[in-house]
Image (cartoon, rainbow, N blue to C red; front, side, top):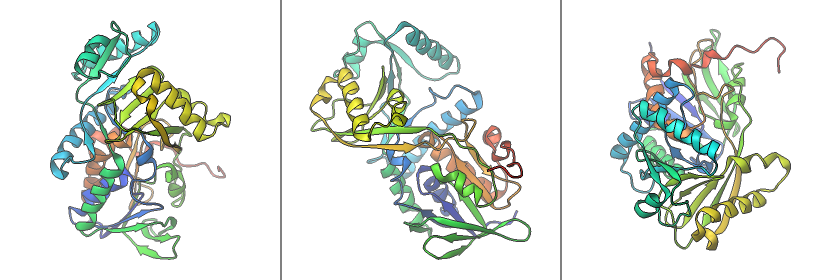
Length: 375
């Protein structure tokens, strides 16, 4: 296969930055295009939990996420961990018998797949790991020691900086208006909203929530779910937790030395009822105080509702689209966990023309073409 001369990567979140860095460090000419600043979209408003324990719906998807965890350990060595990598593990517990049984069943499944975990009591967790929690003494708590959280914006900044140092170009504050194709249907150019046009040999659609729109520019049908999520950042004088956790009704993790991030699927269900982000943030804060009383003195700094980029069947869409030579997709939920591994695998596919077997279940062409007249 002819090595692509110039690649436009649309979207500079965790996926786009990972693909762009891997391409540029192997000598490809890369242009990163983003409507905002790198890493400040969905990547910055994610729970940013690196894990495979919540990815058991399909064994191949679990394996891809395990590979994503391993890729982070390699990345921390390559980049230096500094302000973005926090591998302290993850805690999960429930507060009713049915949810507790489901939690322990999942733990048995994961243990059978050789995924490291410990089942502790609440008292053990407070003594060894998180003294600020109110988890009941005898409650079973599952501890996943190999899981982590990531400061996505800081990581993207590092990746983009490395890519630019390797020769990549960054176009921030502009969007893709059109993708031009040649007589054979292959990608030839990208027109930007600032009026400029890039001559390219390949395009990577890593546009997150806008991925369906970008796909439509090459007459490609990419079905996407609508799943908004509310994330709140609390400002704290002292952060009372050390690692990410899924407590009953609320997800909590540190976010540096003076901030905590909160999320809840239960609160997400209220987004379409008309509640304002400030009200959602107040609800998240109230739930968090029940688990970590020390958060009572924190204040809500900001709440944002972001749209998760989830393909229609819930699984990643990664790789080439045969009907449009030179067009590739890197679209998935769990982009934080999967960013480094997808970045490496997709860059290798673009440069060599050979897809990796690990992505076999997640090829874009599993989605049928749009029917004539369909909108």
